[in-house]
Image (cartoon, rainbow over all chains, first blue to last red; front, side, top):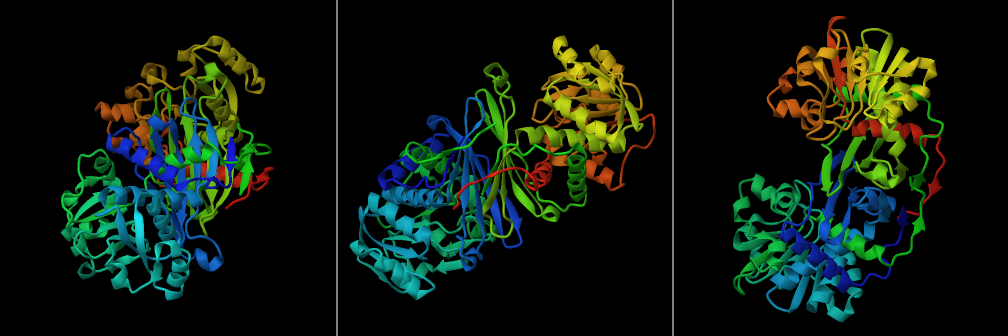
Length: 311
Length: 311
């Protein structure tokens, strides 16, 4: 059994995006197994168990991932993850992978794949709402899929937004007001908000929004009116209704699950998609265990590891 | 993050039984979190993800366990397991534990605890149906809780039964017919059967049965008529109805979930139990993630480990 501490070393965004796109296609064809995430709640956070099996990759396993919002005050990441990979043939654990950074990366890649298929143009002004690790990987992955002409960054803490912008001079990045960031052609929302941050009035027709932050019941970043104006695609129907951007508006009766256009997998297969340049499109990303397997598969091909005795 | 390859070394059955009893009590009081097991199926087996949190122990994590019935022909165990323990305070993975042997042990302990509270006498003739690792741990754990006067062993392969019996001269063990094994006062059924093995006619009034083998939909070891004669206790109501000894008879309309007396936790709390010496009692064991945490907690106190860098 391998232990891989730094699986992200040497990974190329292009390859990550391609691997993630491939499993979304398999998902769209119904060729994966992915039981619902299980949530366990703690006094100061939670953890989720995310099992899956992708026959096409010959990969199966479980990602175990926590969310502890108070961690940064202790010098720890809010989210940390470990992925266990099992042999399909005999069930033996084959690898334990530090998946903290991989989790950010596969989420970035999901956004990039969605943007590649749903954004109104191949060259865009991109707005990011939030300036943490999720925002960074959305930018890095998207830059492999589209040309980012300008990068407009908003954060609750303006210093954070400025620091973030300084890292991306190649995209003409700058710190802006929330309203200005929401005026971009491609928006990635990456906050842990539990009340809408993005107002409908700020969002122009034709925008594509990657709604990344909401991944648990009660979380939401977009005013429900935006959902009603938009064509909404989800990563997985069950997960999104339970814990995605649509979860709060559906429970509140402000949006209906019947109005969801379908999944990203179906978009990639050409079954559904953007129907006009003026339409707002939304990709509601909750994070799929199959994408954790996709990036683990890629990482295991080259990453350094230590061998652990098992059984 | 620790990796523990041999967590079972130095564990004492008495302590294991006590630790398992303690979490069953916590379960009976509703003081645990344990989402349903998630099943993923492969062409030649499956794996289950079993998350849980026991606040009283300060323990949380996930056991990942496979079942590949053809493994023995490849020189591998049918069942292998890995448990990941997380910090409750910050969600960081604290330990990865080889839980293959611990899984057998905590299952043995669950049977021993049930037998201690439900068997008709403190000194019993014990019958075991099946002669694998589950049968062995049922005997070892039960011997700490009750006096085993005689041990009657049946296996489909008589040589296996004889080899098994030779390991337990202290219990006057011997290989017997299936019918004879089922005439014992305490029976442990430990086969992977998907059709009844134990007939009602062979089981005497007053017997206690630990039904261990059925832990997935479609598995069953006892003729449904035995359930109808008996007072049935389960480890967990949801899991048992889904995948325990009662699952097939309930689906077939030959037994009703309403007839289940309650959980082992409720037995330990004195809320329910055996009501007469002549009653047949059954403990339907599916295997609880909280018992994996209980034995992991015990093992981590003393086991040798290697330190893995994380994050």
